[in-house]
Image (tube, rainbow, N blue to C red; front, side, top):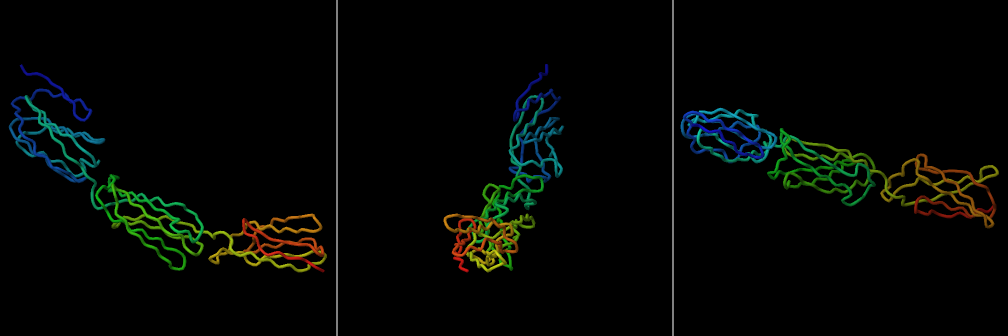
Amino acid sequence: MKSRFTFLLGGLVLAAMPLALAQTGGLRLPKTVEAGSGFSVQSSGSGKAVLYIVGPGQVLRRNVQLGNATLFAPGDLHNAGHYLVALVGDSSTEDGAFDVIAASPPAALSFLAKPSRLAVNLHEGISGVVYVFDTFQNLVLTPAQVSFQLSGIAGAVQTRTALTHNGVAWTKMNSAAKEGASQFVARVGDAASTRVIQQVPGDPCHLRMSAKPSGQRLAVETEPVRDCSGNALPDGTIVTFTETYKGSESTVDVPLKRGVARTDMPAYSGAKISVATGVLIGNEIRWEK
């Protein structure tokens, strides 16, 4: 009497019905298969059997004639990983395993760059991390050379190269000396990804004001406020004017407009007027009529 038996393969219980005259022999399997590629499985013996291939997110089942090659078309297996194989015949089961690796060449990149906005002239202030994938979104684990390029203002270009390790590579770049948007590009072969890094002026480096009569009041005005690289601070940056007179103090907060802050203050003879923005203190004026 022919019997029914079951076995466990990769967490999947397979039930094998007896197959008349099936005598299984050795399996000849590829060691590796590139994702999306066609391949074959060769068996020996005679009769009929059922071939199972079980792997990450995929299960293939084929009725086979022992002694012949079983062909699998391109695209049958596209998830990279370790696959288990079972050839179930009438009275015996053959098993084996092979690996599906990522297809080549790399087809897509996942590129992370941060921060998206930062001050100028920061050493290694920009970091970039890239993950390399094939056309089936498998992480490409074989080493690949990644080219990083940061194109700054006025034609300034920084380049770095890095070799991927387990599918990932990273680098650091300096922010540009001039404000503006830079293109941060990661490239592997024909696959590329671009991020935009906005570089803004740094902390103010020079602050100086002047004063002159304006009717019954005093007009005070800063020179253009810039950072240490000569970039004008953005409009809206707050500048504080402080006037001290006979023990009393008054302050006025003024936003920069076109790089300059200006306001009117009381024209007290003997008053002291100072200016500051952030932690930077500018010059002081003593007003005398």
